[in-house]
Amino acid sequence: MNLYIINHSFHYELENLTRLFYPNEKITVIKSDEPPQTPYIITSVSDMLYVEVKIGEFEEKASSELSDDEESERMLCEMLYKILTKVTGVTPPWGMITGVRPVKLYRNLKENEGEENADKYYTEKLFVSDEKLRLAKTTEIIEKRIIDLSVARSFSLYLSVPFCPSRCRYCSFVQSSTERSKHLIEPYTELLCEEIKRTAEIASDLGLRLETVYMGGGTPTTLSPEQLDRVLSTVNQSFDVSHLREFTVEAGRPDTITADKLYSIKENNADRISINPQTLSDSVLEAVGRRHTTEDFLKSYELAQKIGFKSINTDLIAGLPTDTVESFKNSIDGIIKLDPECITVHTLSMKRSATLTMDGTSIDRNDAVNTAQMLSYASKRLLESEYLPYYLYRQSRMVGNLENTGWSKQGFESLYNIYVMDETHTILGCGAGAVTKLKRFGTTYLERIFNFKYPYEYIDRFDEMLGRKRGIYAFYEKYGLNF
Image 1 (cartoon, rainbow, N blue to C red):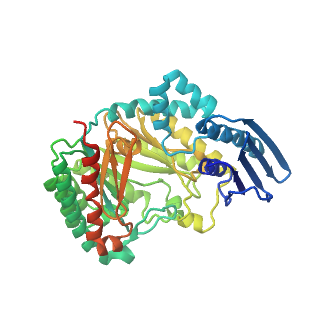
Image 2: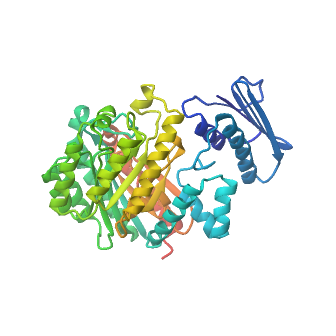
Image 3: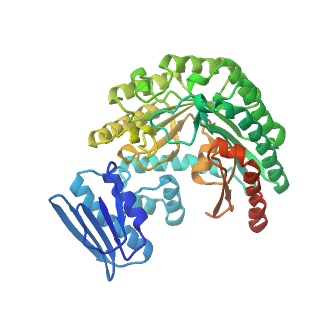
């Protein structure tokens, strides 16, 4: 698909909008008015806003009056959206929204324009379905209560363990398989502990208050019990944890979980873990390269309960290859029967660097329809079982332009998940691939400090990376804490 961008700067949103309707096609952005080659979309701004689409035998044009930049961008998107829904027969459930944080968008509209106007803008200007509007509204209420707990000096800590026992076919995260990178794990662990100590010194110097800790990856439980203990105890010994509200470890893959590792986690005051089956169908697990069975998951879950974890999250993914609506329903029903405190329902995202995508797997209209049915069933069953949506986000290239939603029982919401999605306060990141996000409290302003992505870079250039973290001091010296 050729997307022509003429005399305007709205290419990013128009490209993402086009991808909603043509997820499997390469979209070539052309910033000139050269003679178009079919199939094409022409968008231009002169004395009018203009959109022209020619795909096969279909050809249609639309135009509108100029407005300010923000409204002109929305109007161009609206004209293109209406044409593409006509040519494809597809009506995306989130309408024209292509961004990651639709609930944050709704909250901003609600706070600035009032709830009634926010609802109208969502449905009449962005073409969001009634079902997704209800989901956004319910989620926003729960998020707001937790966001309001944060104050100017609040921050969260993210710890990255970028190792996995193997790479799942849908995964695009930067991580290293233990088969190839086992020799890096011990030196990585040592340096991660050192970075935690240095980061704690900075937080202490600035008077920051630690609210939540999240250890993710990768799969943190690829570390040995002793390595887990070292990292987690370093957090407890280095930071002031007297204000800590939540400490999560993403245990993740059942094939990495042992009693010794769970004891190491629990004895270091981590009160929340994730054990993620992704599906309760063994044939689907095999199709996506998960090296565990449903029985492995059930044993790990039972073990975590026996050891005494009071908040357990489980992840499922809708839209996985070979999964069906019926088998997904069985997965949802099976997880609900276990009665975990949190259930996160993801939608498959066809990331460019994932093995699925590189192998040529594509998604079609039936995949999108089936995945939408999976999510609708999940919502119905979870609400019936007294789970509520507490955070929600979207990714590019999601099947059916759908969403990921965290569901929880009342009082078991993951604060960290909300804070990171809303960008509520500063997140200090430690480990390979971690990003420190410095938030100017009371504004939307963020600055980022990036750690090196790969474990070998993190190890080889550790001192250089630590030097970047001096930027945390500079940020707070410039903007203060507004105590």
